[in-house]
Image: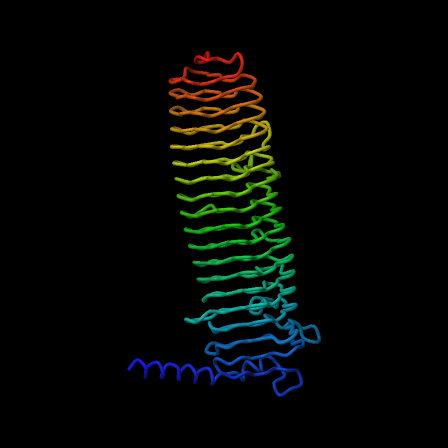
Amino acid sequence: MLRIGSCLGAFVLATSVASAATIVVKPGSSVPTIQFGIDAAAPGDTVTVMSGVYHESLVIPLGKPLALKAKGTVIVDGRGAGGAAHGPGIRVFDPSVSIRGFRFRDQSDMGPGNPGIGVIAAPAGLGLGIVIEACSFEYCRDGGIAMSGASLTVRKCSFRDVTNGFGVGVDGFGAVIENCQFAGSHGIDVDGGEARIRGNTLRDCPSATGIRVISNGALIEKNTILGCEGVGILHVGDDGVVRKNKVEHCEDRGILHDSGSHCVLESNVVDGAVREGILLGGAFSVARKNVVRHVRNGFASPTLLASNPAGMLVFGGSVVVEANVIEDCAGDGLRVSSGGAEVVKNRISRCGTNSAFGLLAEGTNFVAVGNVVIGVRGDGFVVNASPAEVTSNRASSCTRDGFEANFPTQTFEKNTATGNGAEGFDLGAPNLTFRKNVAKGNRLDVAASIPVMTFEFNAFGSGGPLTPPEVD
């Protein structure tokens, strides 16, 4: 019985493959236009288009799954010989279509009914998904690819001077956009679950976001953004991963995730943003091994959060901020506003102005372990959280205090403050525990504005106090 069934399945598959045909489109032949080839094709056929310039606006109807392939240089031009605009390059209504190797050029805006988009996909029902591969889009007035209603894969495509709409705009589940090139074009906009955005490069993006993904379970990985008029990467949703991206010279934030829990921002490099290099919001999220440089603080009218932009700003409950490097930023280095935050082994150097902070902590149940702040133009660590545990951190060569304790019920243990321009430790809150800390070479190693609850086993530089400091 199994053998008969297997043979029957193989026979059905062979029959299906054998029934598929290839239709060749060539100017001057019996199939002279692409639309003629599409109309002649049966479901499952391949339409192969030979080199040439085709002044057409194409339609692939529902019920006609097919493969559309270019052989040689095939240009779908949005204007006729007399310059009249045709409208979109291709409208796709079937959810199982592949389009490979075409060059879409000068898709012109003819109004709401005929937008100047290279490929519009609005399929209904279930299908294997639409694949657009190795195509180019040039001077498309309203976008390169716009799709809703089915899964979409866009791979190895290029977009040049797509200045209205998005290079790729998707409203649907399971979008995959990978290894595409965007030059002087709007970038990627996805609204739908389980999106995969990988290996794309955007240069001189003129839009408010280079890559915008509203998706639970998204993966945004190994993309490069070199110049964006707004936010480089924006993600909203739960369970997302933003990893190994490179974002440079954005006129707003580099990477922004401000809504959604259990997300990971890991091993990204952000250089030259105007606001925060990285902003991470959402409970139970992680920022790990990111590098942020040269946040520029360039606002004419700063908002509350942007009044002193941070290299990295993190908020939301129970976040983990670990092993990040933040350097040469004009504002604060790292700001964490969270209940239950763990801030571990970060390095912050050469940030700030005289009113800035290397690491500013706000919230409750804050833990900081093994962080290093060097050469900040302002205070090193400012801990405005209660309770807080600040252990084995180091502040060196800051222009103001190395450490400030401003809220009650904090424990400072095994920290080191050296060569800071004001106090090594400025203790300004009640109910503090101050144990096994080291301060050397600061203008004043330790000062307290109120009595410290526990003060023991600390070490100070030559002439420094070995007993509790006097109250200022």
